[in-house]
Each structure stands twice: as structure tokens, then as C-alpha cells.
Image (cartoon, rainbow, N blue to C red; front, side):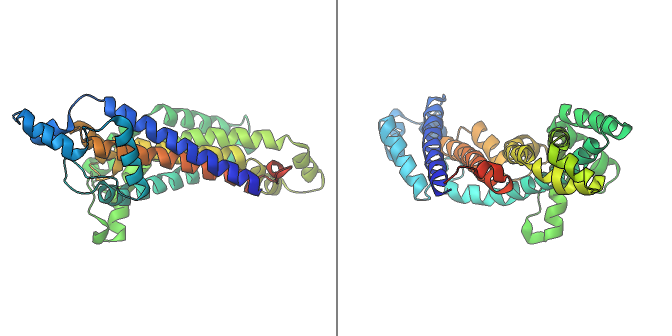
Amino acid sequence: MISILIRRILSLIVTLLVVSLLIFVVMDLLPGDPAAIVLGTSASPETLAALRAQMGLDQPLPVRYLAWLWGVLQGDLGQSYTYGVPVAGLIAERLTVTLPLALMAVLLSVGIAVPLGVQAAKKHNGMFDAIVGAVSYVSIAVPAFWVGLLSIILFSTLLGWMPAGGFPGWDAGLLAGLQALLLPAIALALPQAGVLTRVARAAVLDVMNEDYVRTARAKGLGEGAALWRHAVPNALVPVVTMIGMQFTFLIAGAVLVENVFNLPGLGRLAYQSLAQRDIVVMQDVVLFFSALVIVVNFLVDLLYLVIDPRLRVGVR
């Protein structure tokens, strides 16, 4: 067990280093001079050269990459060209919106999909299964931003139940903050819930045909008890895999949804930094998103060993 944990951690570190290098190189290839963006097109060549030297842009790419990587490891993500403040503070501030939004969306997706998927598997080929299948296919086909626009029209414009956008800040109270995030969370959760419903249904159906489930029924265990005690726990591996993937999809999907609802989160920050060619903010936000995806997949991989004892066979 210790050896496999060490191997996974080493693989995690190598993956993060490779991803960081790719991000830095791709961002460096983007058109536009950061010094010219800061000073404007009317700046003299001498002023531009001085600012480029101050920013370290006159250094070779390997030197700049190592300096940036060393700063990241120390928690220094550089300073934004546009906002003139440390990028670490910007990301931390915007994360207070994006992270609760993603967590709410995951909870909604799991809370909707897992019970529906399990019941659809239990009533396989019945009317309920057909209805769940049709609804899940529709939810998969509908983009999250379109769900967001429809929810604004229905619940904000027509009914007036929910705010149409914006975020009052957590200082306004927990209820006000959660209310502002509810519609965006629903918009993010519904398409993912459709996918997770199909995965949960298929996983439970596969397990229900196993010998130990049939043995449990033969010993007199009820259909519901056999389903939840034996089938569902053993079907968790693909479900947990999809939940881990969905969390990363939701973080990335926040770019569109946060702009639809005018939320000051990481997704909106990424969009604004791209529009303003703020390379420092862009590469740090992309690195954060990438690192989050890699770390979540790493944790899900380790969770397999906890929920499925068969995967621990032969592991030392």
C-alpha cells in the first residue's frame, strides 16, 4: 500500500511539472506584448524595452519558466498587469465564489442522479426507466449556459423568485450568497446529472447480475436490501470516477456560467484576463485549473482502494 502511494505521488508531481511547462510555453506563444498592453500603443521603444526588462521578459524562456515555477512553489504567482495586485490574492478571492458553486453543483448532480440511476436499474425496461432515460438524454444535450439563460427568464424575470445575476458577497449572509449561487449551480448540475444517471444505472445493472447479489436474494434478502447493501456499494467505482470527472468539468464550465450570471469567480477572471491579454493571470488560472483536475483525479484514484477491496489484492 505504501509503495503504490509513493508511485502515485511521484506520478502526480511529474504530471504537474509537465503541465506547468506546457502552459508556460503555450502562453508565451500567444500574440501580444505584455509591456505594450500595459503602456499602450503610444509608448516609446525605450520605455517598452525598460518595462520588458523590469518584467523579466528580456530573459530566455527557460530562465523565465524556472523563475515562474520557483515563485509558484513559494506561493508567489506574480502580479497582474491589469489589476496591479498579486495574482494569488485574485485567485483566492475569486475561489470563494467558484468553489462553493462547483460544490453545490456536484451535490445537486449526485443528489439527483444516483437515486434516479439506481431506481431506473431496479425497474429496468419499465416505464420509469424509459422516462429517466429520456430526461437524462435531454439534459445531456442541453448546454449549461442555455439552461442558465432559461432559468434567468423563468425564475428571475417572470416569477421574480431568484436574483438574475451578480453576487452580494458572503458578508451579506450565508443565505444571500447561496441564493445567488443556486441558479448557476442548477445550470451546471443538470447536464452533468444526466451523464451521472446513465453511469449509475449501467453500473448497478452490471452488478445486479453478479453471483453474490443473486445469492443474497436466494437467501431471502429483499430486493431493496440486496440492491442497497450489495449492488450499490459494489457499483461505486465507475460512479465515483464520474463524480471526480464532473467536479473538474464543473470548475471548467464555470467560465461560461459565471459570465452568464455575472459572478465574480475564477471563470470570469479567466475570461477577463484573456480579453485583456493579462498573461500572468491567464497562466496562473490555467495552472490552477489543471492542478485541480490532476489532484482530484489522484484522490479519486486513491479512493478506489478504499471503496473496492478487490483493488487492494496484491498491493503492498
